[in-house]
Length: 378
Image (cartoon, rainbow, N blue to C red; front, top):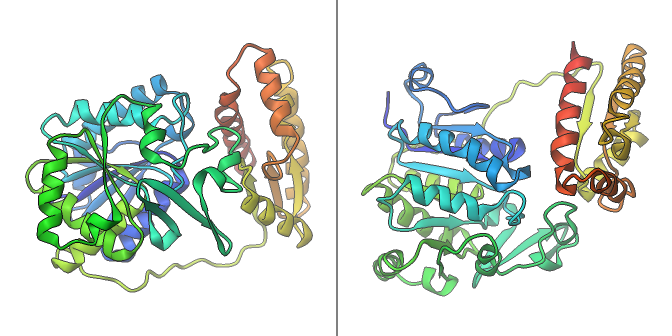
């Protein structure tokens, strides 16, 4: 096999495919698994540069995250890869209770003891996500918002982002020291920047990188790659990590740029769409679909999380969906219609009344929608 450049573990499936897209568009050869691969499985792809694993830790509490991530990172590390990247959403939504990045930092520090400091890169200008003086911003439509004022992420039903200062946000999740490479420092020449970086990594546990433009990303890519030439590195961040590294690899002729990737999708007679999202963007997509010929099946999530009603609810949704599919209809099965859907609070209240964690909604709804989709396809 070639020497692997990067392995990434995505904290959800869509984020994993986002990272895969960046890698492939840049010209690297990559493959995505849903379980950590063995060395033997990887050997079947001798030209591979990068591999990824699509996980689900974004919706899990720290104890469950550790059970999944410790063995996954260990399997990635023994492949001899230069970087192990924990891929997160570019909105960095997390909390001490759910999807804790602090827990990931602690796991990474344990598994990579020879590494001086973990690199953290959240922003990605290509996706209109920016970090400036440690504060994170995201664009929606034509407006860019500080994350704690973002109309979507500040109201996220599970992990609302009420703090835009990423160093402060992480301080609620871990005691590890987080230092910053600011936009002003990234604008200095490469020699001075490298010297500054080396000073900071010796006195910190984590280095957070600002970024406002592609030049900042490319310099970050240079810094974290040079560290990987000394010892394998553990990195946390969005697909900005892929963007930063692939830009540097291209500049160093490690990989060759590809301008496009061809897809061979053909039209079909029917579509089955299943959504567990409460995003306003998803809301607009569902509303468009319902106006343009799709039939909708709304999941009563407050009843779905009730163990006494769960089987009956699942059977009812299945019956509605299979009848529509048998009539030749395209359908959308959805758990909520945007962040203001009343069912969100009803569902949390139902979980609380059973003595369960209201943050378990994603796990319960996701698993049941997965089972439902499998049965419908069968």
